[in-house]
Amino acid sequence: AFVTPIQVGLFPIRLDSLLILSLCVDGIFLADMGLQFFTMYPKRSSRGIIWEDRLTRITRHYLKTWFFLDFTTLVPFDLISLASGADSLKEFKGIKVVRVLRLLKLMRIFRTSKLIHKLEVALSIPYQQMAL
Image (cartoon, rainbow, N blue to C red; front, side, top):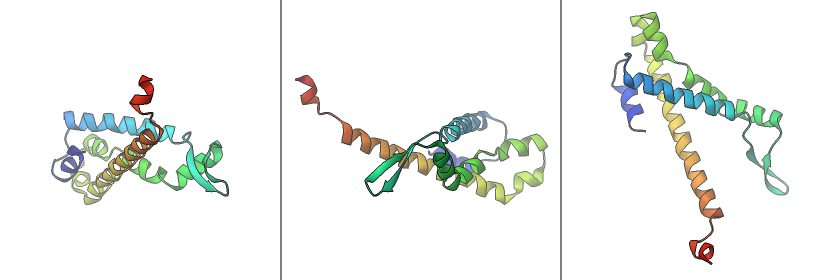
């Protein structure tokens, strides 16, 4: 979480271990992007909050919400600029803007981890009861 802002803002684009690590993280985000087409989401109904389990609606919901951001941040602009060798692409400020979008993905991860923590706390069984 600390490396990405520094990498986006300060480091030049070059083939090194940081770029390879970044591409590995992109691979994890790509797998997550594929899983999002099958992950249920909560929605409000007259009976309260229910989990949507129909794949067509899950797909439509994901395409309307996070898909564009996920897809945009997965385009490997760093790798494209290294492969083409174009200095104009390396100096293009728009690429840094797209790289900053990755920070939004980090915020999404933090939001999800807080949600998981709340679920763990709500569903947890006190250890005193487990000992009985």
